[in-house]
Image (cartoon, rainbow, N blue to C red; front, side, top):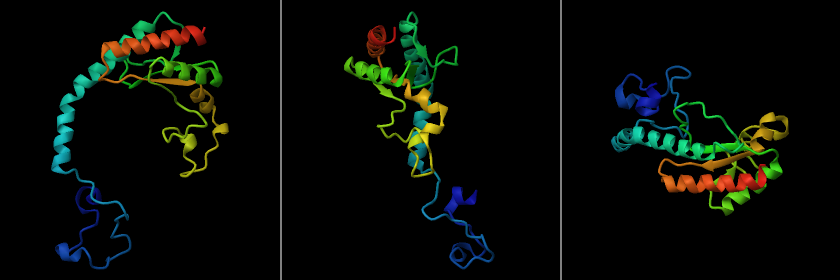
Length: 185
């Protein structure tokens, strides 16, 4: 606790001068190289506090935008990932599944052509550290061993931002409608 909240080194008897003397027992100095003081500065605290004051409005806008788009698309038979909050999702995206990876590729390209902010969640040719299958530098991963790979490969991600206007939400919904009618029937 002292390391994270104070100086990143254990203080020993003798005050600041004693900080740099040899340890009295193994493990007394527990600093990790490259890991410094994690205390928040006053400026960072002020910025965080100002952002906390904006949080309620941001969450309300996120729910509003997701709900606008879902309502505009409710008549379509699209396999959206369920929104578990009955008052509206607090996510930054609408996600739906296509029947296969080839369709997913076509849908993402078509949505982008329509101006929607669409992307794959997982594509083997697009490295993205959000997906564990690309973490091979950290640990050995073989995507072929995971059932989730097939689900993620079929997922289409549409950005829905709290700063989006109703017009942007409806433009994206209309793009989804148009592309769904062409590829997901």
